Length: 184
Ligand code: 5GP
Ligand code: MG
Ligand code: MG
Image (cartoon, rainbow, N blue to C red):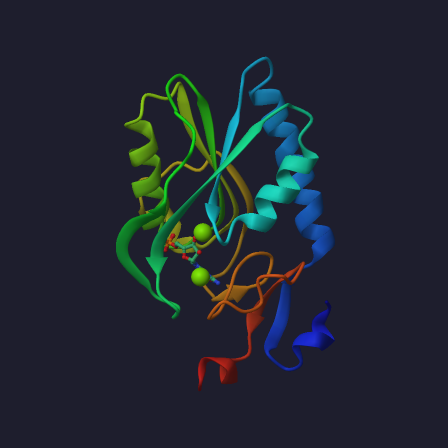
């Protein structure tokens, strides 16, 4: 799929497939070094993190395990509800594990801050966070993100796992939506 397939829905491409993959390979190098000789459990947050998780994991040289959680934070719109609910929990016992939460994007940081605290209460050895994208608002919340792909402007983006009303997740790049798509 390329830009022409989504017609006029996108205003512009913010990060190309090449930029995303290059940064992921750098992040993977850092993660490999930081977890050398340790076990590592990647926890992907559904559904947005599917692409980051799949690509980051393939760039890693370490042997890792992967598990998934689904939490609700946004509705079908573009604003955070501030309410976090577990829709699907992990299958893995976190006792003594080194956990790396893999996220698509941090906006308000509400979801991640809540999730990190929730996982820390389960007796893991460590809990860190990797996020492909970070918006400026995230700086206001007390959540430390160890690995960040790109800092982006405060705009609603889609692609590379990120949706608008469940569409555009399969785009291999990140772009902004044209205003008319919002119903404007
Ligand atoms: P936060 O709790 O940090 O505000 O955001 C939580 C979730 O909202 C993210 O994991 C992501 O799924 C969604 N989200 C935040 N910003 C955007 C955005 O710009 N585009 C899309 N498609 N989803 C976003
Ligand atoms: Mg997410
Ligand atoms: Mg969404």
